[in-house]
Image (cartoon, rainbow, N blue to C red):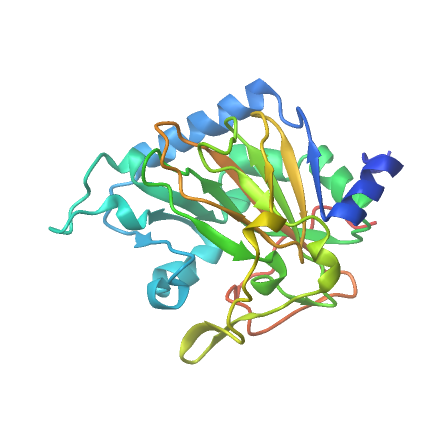
Length: 282
């Protein structure tokens, strides 16, 4: 029996209209606990000697070889505010990491099991994917007090195919609220198309255009419970604010692209040595 699409007509209509869709209770408490425990183990094994700082405000300046090589590895990125003036961490590494990426879905068995599950494949089938691959994955911590802002952006800026095919898949591993840094999105903004591209060339990475100015009043908060799954159109404008609260906001994020009649753009930041494994071929 083949994989079946698992979104209803009403859900698809809502996604096509708004550019995002929230699926409650997509992951079970057991799946959430398994992923969180696995990340605890990965952090325990991480000695901190090989890492980088992640920033969406200073991506060009903070991008280095460690970042580029993370496309096919499990790599660790610290928060900008994790370090003191002396260059040392101000608190334990477990409370200083911004994210872990970008190949958890390929290398780690726990995260691969979820990423390659039938419910992920079925969702992508519902969205019209013919030969989808997960092109990157990230475990995002949004640490208490220092969790950094993610500025307004579109996923298609960073993960481009021709024609465009990126979809963001964002799993809440803890409740995400306005207080601890939930996602915010401009409903319907995906209908306006891609506004800029993130390009990798001989000089590193850069955007081809400055970021537009967005009216904060256009954004709506996507407050969700742990286990909820947010499906994000590649052209949807979305962001999250700093987490100044005492509570973390863990999430596991995936990005899928189609490889059927869709070509990977060669100047994407991800330039892989080995093609990723497709989830299925319809």
